[in-house]
Length: 563
Image (cartoon, rainbow, N blue to C red; front, top):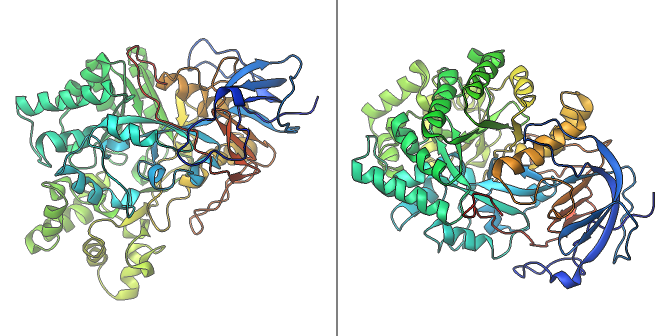
């Protein structure tokens, strides 16, 4: 095999200056020879992955110019012997909405080989918004995303937010119109059905976001205020999404007790609306669901057979991650964050909240009575609490666990981040084998000690579940992380190593790639991913980010494709 060149389209300088954008096409002509995946696109997005092969690859002007044939004279050569060339990984469930603006070089994701993320998840993000709802959203989402000091929140609509991303980010980003954010803007944080005018306003906001470039709509149905929407209300909004060819991406009403009914509701919404469906972080959690993945797979098979166009994503870990406030019953969040804090100071409301959490199983805790030994603090203004479970904190302080929970929520003003130790390995493995499965980190980057999935999801798939456990074959796993999500999002000329496609590429070593992030040290970089390129520009070189910012917002066009 001849010497390899850098998978270029690449920069002629080591980095791209912040905010500069891509280097002019005339400055880029480079070539590469790697072990690569077939350039032939499968006939459907769920088709088996094509086999790998060895080939020389030439990249010019940010595009893959040729696969095979003699290598042209290039500016730089990389010897990629023993490495795999893959399309860049697509994170189908990301929470980098603020992280990309506060730290555009985005080490957590680029060092995993991620070249595109899908933002606006779980029905809650920062656009569209106004002067009333934006401060509420910043407060409600601080446990997920932090609230970076000095960040300019000058946008108010989806177009404005996407324009901010275009000022310079390391990876590409798609955006989903967040249904809970839309509901808050149309009718506040009220737990009631919308009036006809309020429903029309929600339709208008969703349509506007899609016209401005959003790829679809998300919901977070265990979170206020989106969770207050009925099946009929969601169906009406999904009809708008369907009319634009968009994708509906729900975090449904339960991943615990009632999980199967919650999945069934989403397939019914998609069927009634004629909307494409993508199930967010699809899993079955808590002991009540141990070993029940075959039941979910049968439900999804029946829905697909009946004509529902569906897919799903998951992360390759057992614990989940959210905010402590998210575990409260939905009624406790009505009216917004200030009303929630007031209820936490009201003895009568507190008694109801405690009963819902510890006896009934609140809707926020997925219908399962809370086990405080499974709730570990990931972020708090009290650093001594981080890394310890609520049960451990209670035992050390001599207070009931519920009082520890209440104290954290008040002290952190609802921003306490937690891990939930509620997963099931058998279910995780079964769902990642599904032919419509894709990868999503669900990575929260704001907490002091975040879930390691934010730094390790994609190398963990390749190292642990491919090489060590054999749950997926290498080509099949790469397809789950690249071509399948690209086709699901309807990305234009992305997701394959194919001539004419964008040079969003990752080189990894299949023998050594692995995640090193742990629950105690969640920000450790992965190993075995030496090079990552976005539009042919190196964003990772020798395993370290370069600081280049060649990414941009990818927008849905009039034809329904995204690019």
